[in-house]
Amino acid sequence: MAKVQESSNNRLLSLDFYRGVTMFLLIAEFSHLFTYMVAPEFEGTIVHAIGEQFHHMEWEGMHFWDLIQPFFMFIVGVAMPLSFHKRIARGDTYNQVFKHALKRAFLMLVLGWALYCIDPGKIVFRFQNVLAQLSVTYILAFIILKRPVAVQIAFSVFLILISEALYRFFPLEGFNHAFLPGENFGAWFNILISGKEDGGHWAMFNAIPTAAHTIWGVLAGQLMMGNKTDKRKLQILLVTGVLGLIIGFGLSPFTPIIKRISTSTFVFASGGWSILALALCYWLIDMRKYQKGVLFFAIVGMNPLFIYLFAHVGGADLIRKIVLPFSNAIFAGMGEVYAMLILSIIVLFFLWYLCYWLYKKRIYIKI
Image (tube, rainbow, N blue to C red):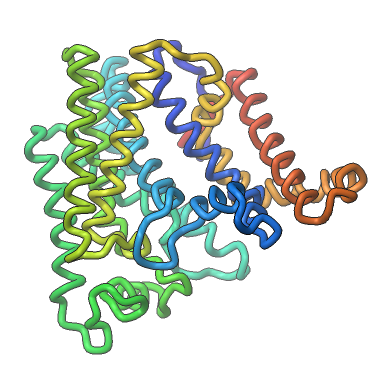
């Protein structure tokens, strides 16, 4: 399933940094850092205000944390043309690359599904997490990867509009409220696939509209590989990113921005932020060559699948149990919440250090 590969010297450092920051924040969630930041003891402080941004919106609206999955799906898209170009350059045929893409999508789907079976200790059919969703967006983006830009854009918009139409017009008795939790097309689809609605109202069908994020990432990756000047590339990223925000927030009075069912406005707005985040990284790291401290995050971005799975299946909790007695001995006098906050930071550091150790050993675990 997994293999160890040598690192390439020809990397887009801004992409590694972008991916690294995203993964660093994902594993920070498993350290419980954000949970303690919103403890009642921090009410009214900047710690609490920042902590709130690292929790999903209950329903309508957008917090920063709602952008993490779109960021990751977009980043995978950016890397796709870069990766496949290398495979073709070393002699792989298109059919070989296509088989690799199918295998990778299948493994992501299986891994994403398997994560839901761990806690109950039995087989359940749920596909809402980032890996399972990404398996669908990845293969959809690959199918049209060689098509003209206009075709890729049109296909991404088509997927968004299909989703919008299903939520608004699909005739479903008992599920005819387009944007109410538990009473919409996404809830019906969850019940159809798994037999029950998700407790947090996360829709499995989200993989269809959010495929736009991965497709837009592919377009950004193709832009990065093109012959345009750095300045022109940055201009295109900025214009398209702002356009996504204008469409998403501009249409929000008609279609609310809801991450849990990935409404059309959410896809456009979060896609706009994803593109602008890439533009910032590209300008700062690849154009301005400001690379001091970049490696700290980039090394996490070089082993994203491994560290996500390791933290998810109990690696973070194991580190927490090992460190807890020593942390309590040193910091318990500060108060429980402060001690737990420091413990979460220590756990996060050890997760980061594991990525650093893999980087120093030149081990890159991929599928």
